[in-house]
Every structure is written in structure tokens, then in C-alpha cells.
View 1 (cartoon, rainbow, N blue to C red):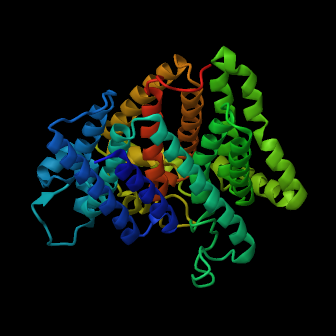
View 2 (cartoon, rainbow, N blue to C red):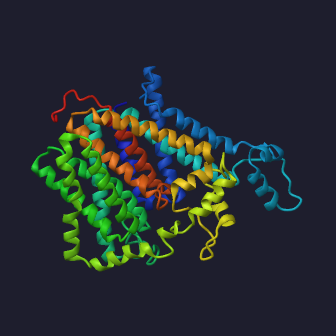
View 3 (cartoon, helix red, strand yellow):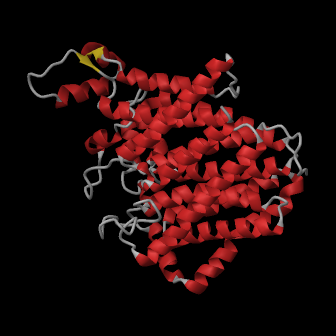
Length: 446
């Protein structure tokens, strides 16, 4: 079975997950999960027929397996006295909130096992996508096609978002009921989810623009990247605009580490100038500046929470230090620790990293840190020794995209949006595979 089958499947999953309202509804996500299962079954069948399992050795499979083991441990039923020894706070939750006279013998470390089971299936889907891409998309042509398909997707939803902004700003699609979405942008019901998604694609376009490509391709890719950046600006997403600027600075700093590429760092940092000039000429800039000014209001980022207080999350981490409350259970535990009287219920913490530690504890959080430490160490080490320009600028754009969404995770819950998480998994795999790609037969050299 050729790579085209897997490549087409990955692109189809990315497109559907995005267009189906970000796949936040379970039945849309189920379609993507089934398609991922089909691809995994095809890979396994092919490997069994060939009697050969060719796996990329990156050193990051072990932390993934340990993380999954932690989550599975949260779902294992234990006697209540044993739960008390493993996690006193979990025991108190059961003791205080179970109906009187209802005393089942077995309990799980997750305070809501069905929520944890649901999140485990999501995690397995993201892991499977990462596994498939890193092991099957293994040549320059396929990687080039996949990256350009992602840029095309970003351009299309950005163009749609700009039209939507003026034609029907209260709904995602024209056939949706009026007022069905409060702050939609493109196929996402919330502009912050759109800005998180598009912030991962803009650096990919910049990576191509830095390469030695033909004038016609430069015009096309430049236009696509400009439209995406313009859509980001008119989304009025405070976090999205900040993440975009920080990501550009990060890319410029990476370029400065390579002596021959330092002259292009300024080009990256000046990229938004064209878009800003266009924005100032055709739109009202005062609304953007007014929106950014609210960052300094008491209830947003300066207050450390942007919704749910970070201090309250740290209290959860303190009470459930080792194994957490259970993956996906923040919406159930948040009301107990919430100190914000203006809102009683929070599904997400607006800080994916702190929420992760509250749900999986130090053990699960360490596995995630272990994975990314190995991953970025190897990617950057390989990147610093590469001379092929397609690899250099492809990895540069990809790392910029990954940095953007990870930085965004400090300010919002974008990685809990399935479409965003799926794109993140694909880019993780593509960047690593690109960093170790052989340079034989390449046309561009630096």
C-alpha cells in the first residue's frame, strides 16, 4: 500500500476535523477517530504482509507509553482503602459527595472515569496520527505536499473567515441559525480557536517564503500567508495577536543561531508590516488597539487566569500531586476550587499546561515534559547541522508553529480543540521527520 493512501487519509482527517466546527462535537470527532483507526489498521496489515515493522527511533516513544500507562492507571478500579493510600484528596471527594448509604467497594483514581476514558480515546487518536505521519510520510515530495495542503487549508478558512466577518458574523456557516455562534471565525465557533489554528499555519508559509523558490510560487505563497495574517488581525483575538508576534521573534532568534541565515531574521520580523499597513488602510485600527488595551484590565491576564484563576489550579495540583484528578476531569473538579464568584462552572482552565498537571499529576506531567525535552533537543540538534534549504526553512517554520501553539497553551485551551490538537500532532511528526530527512537528490543547498 503506497504512501498516497496514508497521505490522502491524513489530509482528509485534517480537512474534516477543521470544517466540522473544529470537531468539538463528539459525533464529528468520532468520524476522525474512525478514519484514524482505518489508517492504523491499514498500516498494521501492510506491516504484517511485509513481515517488517519499520519504526522511526526517536527516543520519544517511551514517555508516550508511560503517559498512557498513567492514564490507564487512573481508570483501574481499586478498593476505597487503597484509594485513600494513593490519593487522600480523591478519597475525600468520594467520601464527601457519595449519596448516603451508597458505598460501592471499588473506585478509580479518576473522579469521573467516563470523562477520562473519553480523553484517553482522544489521546490515542492524536498519538496514532503522530505515529502514522512520522513513520509513513518519509520523503521530500510527500512532506512538501502535506505542508502545502495545510497552507491551502489555512488560506481557505482565512478567506472564509474574512467573508464571514462581514456577511454573517453571528454564525459559522450561512445555513446555521442566526446567533448560533457568539464570536465565530472561519469554521470555529470561537475566534480564539481560529487564532490558535491559524497561528500554527502562518509560520509554515513564512518557511516557504524564505526558500529559493520561483517568483510565481513566492507570489502565491506570499498572498496565502498575507491573507492568513490579515484574518488573524481582524479576529481581534488578543492572545492570538500576542502569540503571533512572539512566534515571529522566536523564529528570528532561531535564524540568528545560524550565521549564514542571520540576514533573513529581519525579514521575518518585518513580515507583519505589510499586513498591518493593509489593515490600517482598509479597517478600523482603533478597535484592535482598544481590544489589546483590555489586557491590562483586572479580570484578564494580569489577574492570572483569563477566566479560571491559576492560583486555584495550583491548589488542585497541591491536593492531587502525583496522579491528579483524572484526565479530562477539570470541568468536574473546578467548581470545588473556584474562587471566582462571577462564574461558577469552567470546562477548561485557559491554561492547558496547568490543567494537564492538575489532571495527571506530577507523574503524567513529567512524561509530557520528558517527551518534549527529547523531541526538541533532537530536532534542534539535527537542524543546526543541516545545509539543505528545504529542510532548514521547513523545520524552522514547523518549530515556529509548534512554539506558537505551546506558548498559546499558557493563555487558552486550544489544545483541547480536536482540530487544533490533530494539526499539532501532524506538525510534530512532520517536523521531526523533516529534520532527519536525507539530503540526497535535493536541488537546494546552502
